[in-house]
Length: 231
Length: 104
Image (tube, rainbow over all chains, first blue to last red; front, side, top):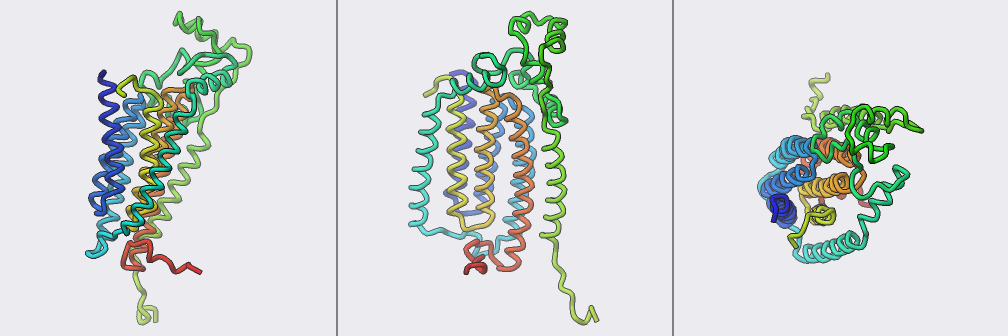
C-alpha cells in the first residue's frame, strides 16, 4: 500500500465517519465537532487531489469560518431543554431506510458509467482530436499541484492552463523547446483564447456584499422604541 | 479493495457525504443541525468537482467551481444563521417544527 493509498483511505474513513457521526449525534455541540473532523478530512482529500489552493481555502473558510459561525449559532440559540431536540425512532428508521436506498442508487450509478470512455469523449469534443485519458500534455498546473496562480488568472478571465495545453501537436510538447511552443501557440490555424470566469467573479463579489448587508440587517439587535421616548 | 486510487473512490466518498447531508437535513429538528447537513451536501459536491478536475480533461474548471461553491456556502451560512437567530428570538426555540405559522 503506497502512501497515497494510505492517506486516501485514512481521510476517506475520517470524512465518512465524521459525516455519519454528524447524522446520528443528537447533541448540537458534538455535531459541530464531528463536522470539523469531516470537513478537515475533506481538505486532506483536496490536497491528495493536487488542489492545494482549494484545500487551504477549505481549511480557512469552512473549518475556520463557517463552523465557527455555526458554533456561535449554537451558543446563541441553545437554551437548556432545547439543546437536544430528538426525532422519534420511527422517523429515524424511515430516514435510514430511504437514505440506504438512495446511497445504493448513487453507488450503482457511479459504477454503471464508464468514466474513462466519457473522459475520452470529452477530450475529443474539446480538442477535435483524441488526446487520451487524463489531462493533456503541456502546461498542466493541476498535475503539478501548483494551482494558485492559474486559479487567479482564471478568475481574471484568462486561461493560460488551457491555451498553453491545447491546440498543439503532442510531439512539440515532448521536446519542450520554448521557441517551438510559442510558435505553436501564436502560429496556429485558429487561435482562440479560452474564456475565464471574470463575470462569475464579479457576481460573487456583489453577492458577498449583499449577504454582508443582509446578514447584518437580519441579525441586528432589535431595540424596542418606547412610546414615551417617541413622544 | 486497496488497489490504485481511481475516480470512483472519490465519487463514492462524495456520494456518502451527500447522502449523510440529506439525511441530516431531513431528520434534524434543530435549525443549526439542518445547516450542518447543507454543508455536508455541498462538500460532497465539491469532492466530485475536484475529483473530476484531477482525473478527467476537465482541468482547472472543476477547482474554480468548487471555489465558488465554498464562497457561496459561507455566504449561505451567514444568512441562514441570521435567520435562525431571528427565529430563535421570535419562538424562543430553534426547533424548526415550531415554525408552522404559514400552514394553511
